Image (tube, rainbow, N blue to C red; front, side, top):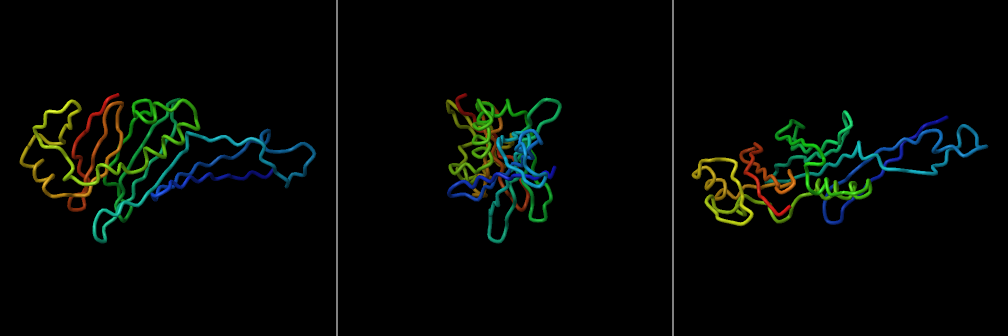
Length: 196
């Protein structure tokens, strides 16, 4: 029997994120009784949430860009979420990895369809946090505080004043990580807490 791959692409409105998932049906799923070996009909397509990938271009400066590469994979019975920032030549600038059940928006998905939608959201850019200028003061007193990526207030204040481009994503059950591009390097700005 001839095998084939069905590629599902979800393009989110207003952003450049594309998510692809490949499913190759088994013979029992796809061949209709009495058809020739060259005739294949898909009768039941399911999403494989162990092979989701998404990429988007991050144009963070004049003539400067990176690729945000996100994925869900499975190993040893556990779903893992991964998010990388890749430089213009594909070199890794930043890597995040955690079990899916430790990442709020992904952990809350109650079905494969819901996980697919949650992954699309997670792979996208948080429009509220796009610049280091949006970071709160170093010594802020807030109900849901921001925890700076440095203990040096002068460094943190320079990050804020630099107004560097920043990408934030959910990295825990009650927090999101913010990473800025500073002089071509991906630098962890810190973690913003939120109610879980």
